[in-house]
Each structure stands twice: as structure tokens, then as C-alpha cells.
Image (tube, rainbow, N blue to C red; front, side, top):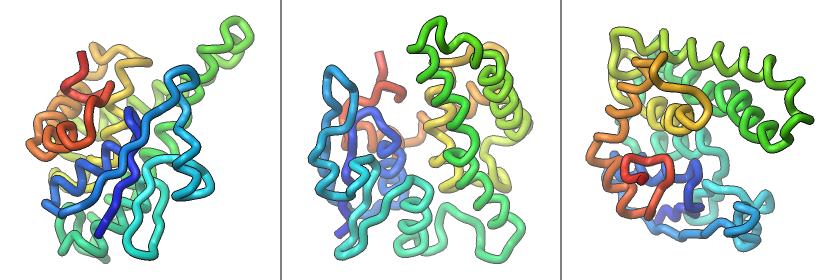
Length: 211
């Protein structure tokens, strides 16, 4: 059986959501961040040496990285759901979005959050980081113009993968100037499977049940 090693308030929430969308039975092993450092507990290193989440185990297979986990689940358990048919133009577009979320979009966001802790020492980096952040948010905003979902206007694993990006956007940038992203975020969080994943995984600071 599939086991999701789930860290609170992390990207692993996406994996629970995907499995709820597919209606697949899975086991959940939950880990809590250190209340002082906010880091993952050392127990996760027993699952994978990097000690990060999400981690998916499936019998003897251990898979890390959200995009790789989404791809694995859909290839092995999806029965053609939540992704375009392989070999189509839509599938190529889907793959780009699947990798873009973590490969490009998250970098300026993480830099923004980390350098903010440096105070004046991080100030020289802020203009460049802000430019990159606006570039990527503008790209996503324009890509959502006139559509509900990213790939062929059909909900897919790419939307689940990008969800973490749009969920933390309000921490860094006002959604007032990003109406397409704001509406997209609401659509994602209104899905029944999204809500079911919140119940299964517990409180999620960036979700629709956040205070």
C-alpha cells in the first residue's frame, strides 16, 4: 500500500490531495516540525537520507520530490486520470507546468522568505529577487487569463503541483493585482478532494481552513 510521509504545513499536503482526487487508499504517517526551528524532525531521515517531505513509499520503492511523486502516482495508479494522453501536445504542456512549479517558480519565493530574515544584510538582494518574483507571478497570472485550469482548461496534476506556489503567494505579494491567481486559488481550495485532504492531514496554515 502507498504510504505518504507527511510533514505538517508542507508541500506534502499536495500529495494527500492528489490521492483523495483519485480515490486511492493510502496510509498516512505524520511528522511535526520542531516548534522552535520549524525544521522537519530527524525521524524523516530514517525514511530518506535528506529528511525532507513529501516522501512516498510503495512496497520497496521510495520516491521523493513532489513532481516525481505526482508522476509516479498517476503512472502507476491514475488509470489515465488527471493528465493528458502521453505523446500529445497537451502532455508536453502538462510536463512543463509539473516541473515549473518547483524548478522555477519557487526559487524567488524561497529567496524572498529567507533573505527577509537577514534584515539590512539582505537588502541589496531584494530588488533582483522582487523582479524575478514579479516576472513569475506575472507569467502565471497571464497563463490563467480566460481559463480555469492550466492545461487544456482541464484540471490535472499540474494544478495540484502549482497549488503550493499560489497558496504562499499572499505571504509575499498582494493578490489585489493578481485577480486570476486569486480566483484560481479559490477554485483549487473549493474542490471536495482538497477539503478531504485537509481533514486527513490536519491543520494546514496555507489552506482554506486557515484562520
